[in-house]
Image (tube, each protein chain N blue to C red):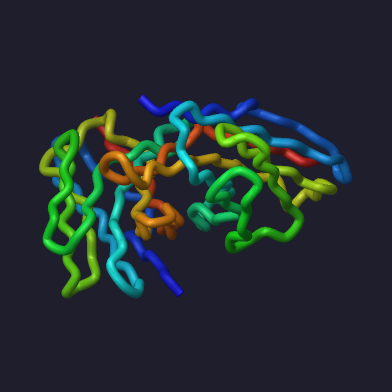
Length: 114
Length: 112
C-alpha cells in the first residue's frame, strides 16, 4: 500500500513565523500536491510538482512556496505565517501510470496560527 | 474552468436507509471521476472511481456511474451503516497529471 506521511498532525505557530510542512511518499510517484481544506470550501490546490525541482502554482498559491529536492519529499513553506492560513493541510501523491490511476493522501496537518 | 458540485450537507440518515449524494461536474475533455471518503481526524481515502463514460465504480456497497450525457457521478448505497458516517468528496481528475478539482464535501451522519 502507498503511504503518504505528513510530519505533524497538529502544529501551532505564531504570526510572522516561517513554517515548514513536510510530506514523504514511499511509492516513487512523480506527482505530488499540497491542498488546504476549509469547512464549506472543499479542497483547494496550493501547489503541485511533476518531478524533482519542478513546481507549478495551483489555485491559491499566495503566501506559500514549495520545495521538491528529492522525488519522495514535497515541502510546503509558509514564508510569513498569518492567521488566515490557519487550516487543515493535506499532501497527496498521484499514481498516473503502472496501474489504475489514483491519488493517495496523507492524514493531514492541522495548523493553527496565533 | 472545471468545477464539481455535490449535495450540500449535512445529510442525516437512519441506519439501513438508502443513500444518494449527488455530484455533477463541468469539465472539458474526458476526466476521470472519483469519490473519496474522509473519516474524522484522517486524510482522504479513495472510495471508488470511473475512468470513462458509462463505467460503474463500486466498493464497500457504494456505487456510482459515470454519466457523460448528464455530467453526473452520483454516489449511492442501498443500506447505510453507522460506520459510514464521514465526509464524502466528489472529484474529477485529468489522469495525465493527477490535478484534481474537488466538490465542497458532503457530511453524512448515520444514526442507529
